[in-house]
Amino acid sequence: MTQDELKKAVAKAAVDYIQPKLDSDSIVGVGTGSTANFFIDYLADIKGSFDGTVASSEASAERLKAHGIPVYDLNSVDGMAVYVDGADETNPALELIKGGGAALTREKIVAAVADEFVCIADGSKWVDVLGNFPLPVEVIPMARSHVARELVKLGGDPVYREGCITDNGNVILDVHNMAITNPKATEAAINQIVGVVTNGLFAERAADVLLIGRENGVETIKA
Ligand code: 5RP
Figure 1 (cartoon, rainbow, N blue to C red):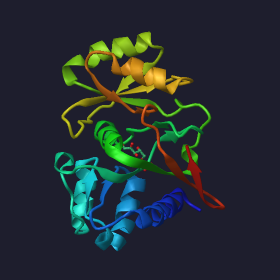
Figure 2 (figure 1 turned 30 degrees about the vertical axis):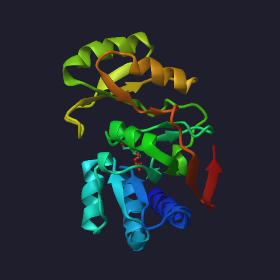
Figure 3 (figure 1 turned 45 degrees about the vertical axis):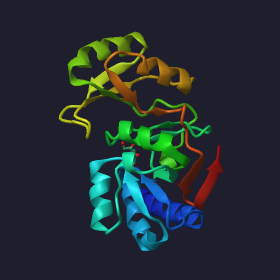
Figure 4 (figure 1 turned 180 degrees about the vertical axis):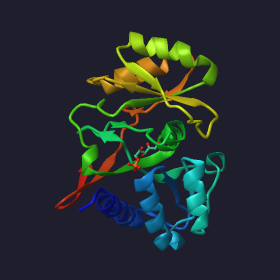
């Protein structure tokens, strides 16, 4: 199977997984990226089974609306049954690196609100130790050089993501060469740097369920 076929398989599996949990009042949180896009396309098939969605990016909001799926502002909903999103890496504790698509801050906010976080990923995203994928850090633009120097002190090699402005008007530093053996500690340490909005480690709020696509089918792993 190609990587896209694996992404489609987990996206379909996510719709099958969440459908029994939804009713006409339910709000579904929707992530960002190519796997999340496949999820949005399958979600359209069951759009009568829930109230609406909250999107973690402008791009996902546009795709949802194009399918005729209602999109709400997060401040106008009381809660969220489930959040479904992809990842750049996952470890066996379902701690994640996210933000390859620069949507990490809104993704982290929506994940924080959701009762259940379902991560969908093809098998290439599975690692024992996080950090092979460069860790995205969203930064207030005027703090970029300061934050980069502080990230070097933490042992990383930050690289400015040229030409990338987040939906929040900020910039991204991608931190290379960090073997992240204690994800919660690294998440907290980076968030302490003045000028950091947030970083792409999802360890404090890890996924609750991982649907991972492998050659022999979709495996469900619970934290
Ligand atoms: C966007 C993300 C995505 O979930 C992550 O980059 C995975 O993307 P894809 O599904 O395209 O592989 O965190 O900010």
